[in-house]
Length: 470
Ligand code: SAH
Image 1 (cartoon, rainbow, N blue to C red):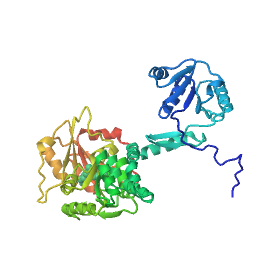
Image 2: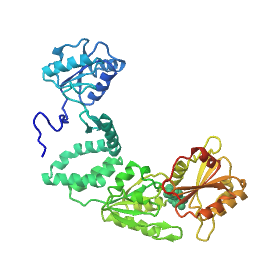
Image 3: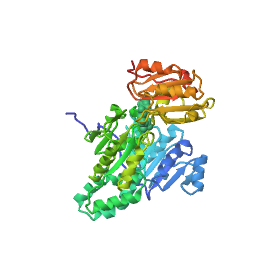
Image 4: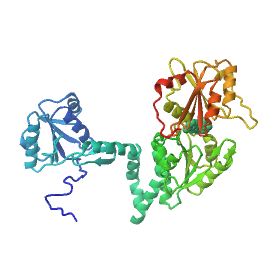
């Protein structure tokens, strides 16, 4: 075992949170560096005094607003007396060290900005969700690593966590009536369940109702999250989608949801495949709707995960109409739709000032009787991009109709298979020749068709290199 002697501690810096209300804090320096520290201190310290020969515009304004006080122009050691903290923030390194020595002599904690050696405290890197703070520090060992970590934490913590913490603080008195051993369990249930989710979705009243139910010992209520999983690359999920994926008790997913995304669903969540493939409706829509209702009524947090965006050719509207009719709570999380994902990863902008002033999304899915009733005269137009979802099977017909309604045979068209995924393939051609190219390549993955002059831009704007395309 390693022996830690008292003068060689494993880590010489201990993070603490300090009460600054009612205490004086002295900042020596009046430039940008001092202002940066004052900005931070103002979040917690109402009584800040500045000693500086001159103050920059920001500090001058703060003095004028009465938010900080200008103490003296010239520093002397007696000023540190009675302060809870001292910050030396001038641009003179030696001078800063003299300030530090004076504070040390008076046993007042001191920080010299960007100079840990003479400092008795340093400020960590912070993520703020007031009243919540997350502090990251390496004791000055690796500031760049600390910044990275801070960014990651920043992206992990929903913006609403501050509201959540404030809500919990406000409602503590109600929960206090419970026996100590139940309080913690109750808050855990609240955080895991609909209460916290409602609050993060901005509905404080519903969160309070949920808390009241828990206090009365009623069982948690289920809810449904209708979530867009995007076109396949897991990096394109939204923060909210990921959070709900990691919370759900049960997930109903389509064929379009990529395995890489399913990896991110909570490990112990029950997985129900309700995938649909052309002409192979594994589970009829009505059955999916009633399954959602049944699971939510059993108190489950149900994740309905859909490829792309749930409100674009996703029948998301039908699913939540049923929930709404049954009084079940739900939320809808948008996802990146296939058109946006495929366009970006294929280097084909959907609009362009010169050649596409509008963009239309249409379905190329034929009805059961084989008809494809589209407004061809509106689709076969110059100056517009047309995106066909579910159009591989009908591609030859689409091309013929567009030419019949006036577009030239050499009009550009692309097919993007498995857009945004490592298996992505892009086939480029014209209305006249793409169908045969596609027939030869025989795409088996989800495929999107983009029609319009923007397709030509791919030559210059293509950037994505699929890793395992054949
Ligand atoms: N709600 C989805 C669309 C569902 S319809 C969304 O917003 O993207 C299914 C069709 O979407 C497929 O037939 C295909 O045309 C298209 N699609 C979905 N994901 C795709 C992908 N990764 N690459 C290419 N096309 C895709």
